[in-house]
Each structure stands twice: as structure tokens, then as C-alpha cells.
Length: 332
Image (cartoon, rainbow, N blue to C red; front, side, top):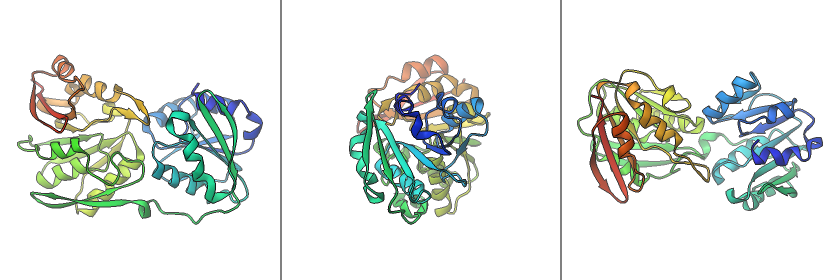
């Protein structure tokens, strides 16, 4: 059981009515709170919840269209995303209770101040290295559209400026990260066919590739619903068309790919997590056609080259700089 869920279950009498669990973990909390309904934006968690508790969780960037007596928000990974989720929840719960739960190392103490606009927050519990906060919504806010919280920036590419639309919670929100910047400089000589941007974030790589290789089929894939929404906005802002998917890692990707491009994540919130990337490296060959290429950028300290060579083939370092390396390998 996730420690945040354990903190909630220390006071189960607070959560007996119709309850929304926003950003909930994929544990057994539904089994202990039979009147709860989930709002999830992580495809892996959603798949796990749906397998065990079918029909009890909504996936997407918008709050479910149903009535609740109260809501628990599991502290999201960024302040901007926390603001959006709390606003969406509080706008629906005037005069009712909103709870915020999170780990201390994730910044729950500071995040509790984000409850101040809605009323007078109070700390209910502190255990399992987590805290539980509560506020009765005295000041219900106006609903903020997700698009109104987007940040836009332009990249001066050889094919012309590329407009990037970034939403709260998306990796490197509002700016280009150094790894993607390096990979953008080395998109030459990609094979024709079906190209995948794995872990697409705001859609920078996928949009740049679609503009540079307009006759190629391009798919963008991310585990996060906010990233997928950002990618769709980025594509639309540049007049580009490509497929955008949400799914739990490389297993959700199409087969028969000509190339996989990626600046893969290795953090989930404050936690280091290499599983998605290592799973990509182990299974890339399955999704690539013969002669298909993996082109990946990663921090130089991450020793991915041996894993790539074990599962795909000879791996070369195509470029490096600013603490990053681009690895390139082909399926033989």
C-alpha cells in the first residue's frame, strides 16, 4: 500500500461519502474506500486500476463529470499542475472538503499553502513520512481552462520556427531542455517510414521530425495525459498532423517502426525510476523493423550503451555535449 493511502486510511471516517481521488496510486485504496472514484492521468496507473477496479477511474486531463461530496488530491509532481488540479476540484466543491496528501520529500508542507485561496487549511495527520491537509472550500474559484495555463515558446529550426505549447506537469514545462536541444541538432539521415517519439512530453521532437520529414508517418507516445495533450497542441500550432498516443511505455508502441527517437525520463516525481527507459532498450528491437534505428539522448552518467548493445546491436555515440550523449543503434 502506498504510504499516502495508508495515511488516509488512518482516518477512514473522513472518506465515507462520494469521494474523488485525484492522482491516486495504483494500490488497494479502492478496495478500502468503496464509494471512491478516481481521476488519473498516468496511463500505467490507469491500466492497473482498470484491471482490478473496472470502471472506477477516469483517465484524462479534465475532472470527471460527476458529483462528489469531497475530494482527495494526491500531491502532483509540479506546483503548476497542483494549482490546476486543486482549482478544478475546488470549483466543484463549494462548501465541501478538499484534502491534500503527499510525501514530505515531495514538498507537501509548502504545497499546503496552495490551499489558502479556498479557505483555512489545517493539518490533520503526519505519518509514514507524509502529511494530510484539509480545507473547507469557502471561496470556490472560477474554473480555469487548461489551455489558459499553457506556456508557449519558439525554437529557431532550419525548417522555420517551431512553436511549442507546454502544459502544467509536462517535462521541462515552458522551456527546451538540454538533452532535447542536443538531439534536435542530430536528426539527420533518419530512415523513411514510421517514426516514433517515445516519451514525447510537449511534442518537441515529434513535431520537429514531422516538419523535417513530412512524408514519414510519425507517432508520439507518452505515459502522461498532460504530455499527450501538450503534444497535440504543439502539432496543431504548427499545422502538423501526427498520431499521439498515451500508453504505459514501449509496450504501447506500434510495430514495424523505422526509427525510435527518445529523450527518455528517469524520474517519476521525486523518485528515480529507470524502468521505462530500460524496458525501451530491452524491447526496442521488437518494435523496429530490420534496419530500424534507435536514436536516444541521455545524461552521460547513465550507462545505457551496454544495455543497448545487449538487446539491439552495435551502439555508437553519435554526439555529446552539455553532459548528454546521443546513442545510435540499428536492428541488424
